[in-house]
Image (tube, rainbow, N blue to C red):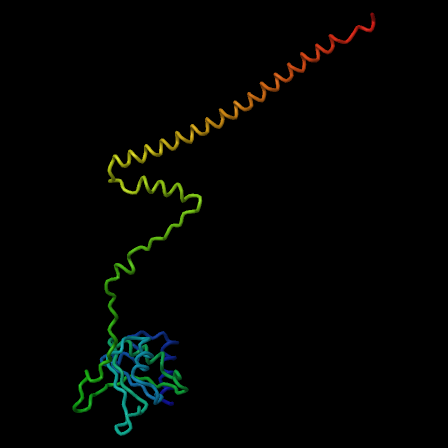
Length: 233
């Protein structure tokens, strides 16, 4: 705990004095990309430590010290960053931070491998990114919306489809279709004219009958008046 507070005090003084990176105490360890991480909870695994310390750089190697008999974590590890400048950031930001209610101790270190060990034995393995294959059909191809015509449009659309379905149809077939369409229009026109003519004839007949009836009534009225004697005589 004393070492944690000491590092925090040094960092606070340098921050207040606006000390440059070159004059900072971190510059003395610019030749080592390793940091020491202590007071770790025994439940923390290598991947957990990598995830936590990836916030300030790219960890490349990690050696979590374990009990040889039980295989459990002994509470400290050595982590190597790809860039040594990440070490200063991790120390300044993680020192004293509690993980599982335990304040972390983070400091520079000159890590040395034990006899028989190789640095690549502690290489951090990252999962390879999944490759996206053949997305042209599933992603890039636009999806066409289905069109549903309204009921009153079905007759017109069906006829139009019959006429324009294929631009490369037999021209005589197209001519026959146009002829049918023209004859249909003429037939409808004749039927309409016939109806109008019949209605006109009917109205004219009624008019003639009415006129004839009026004339007949008028003639009878004159005859009746002629038969009446002149009372004044």
